[in-house]
Image 1 (tube, helix red, strand yellow):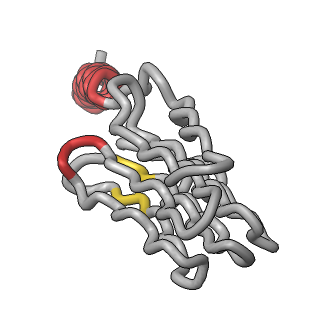
Image 2 (spheres, rainbow, N blue to C red):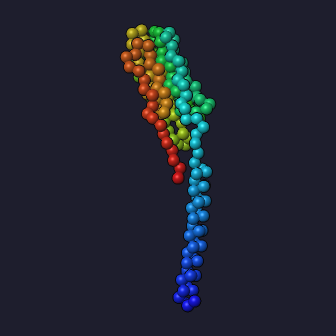
Image 3 (tube, rainbow, N blue to C red):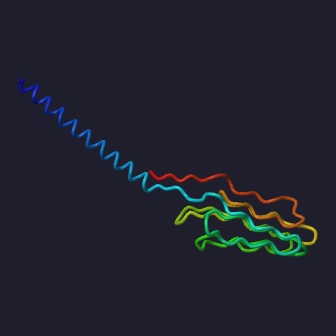
Length: 166
């Protein structure tokens, strides 16, 4: 074998070894990235609370199994308040909607930091002749129930949220 052929063979051997090491590193990185990304156990939203035909709207408590909240119940009867919504992890609670059927119910929200959480809409209120719609739900969350005599109803939040870690 001449010196040129020996150098070429040596170079091929070095490149082969480097390529194998590079492939092994990429494989380890892929395993780490897939290992740290996860899937939520429950992406189903929480059921909303029932409204009332004769009393204040039912409040929505935080869910113990999902990060997406349902909407609060709407009020019925004369001059009752719409229900409030308490999301998970101590985030801002949507207060009850003032009685009288004139104050709009508060809309829900969806935030991703520092902890992923969604809040449904507050329930609508009512008077003897007019009611307000419930608040719109945050992304993936339920809207609040409408107050009795409301002309419009609440809307649930927009579709799904996908979070990718790469």
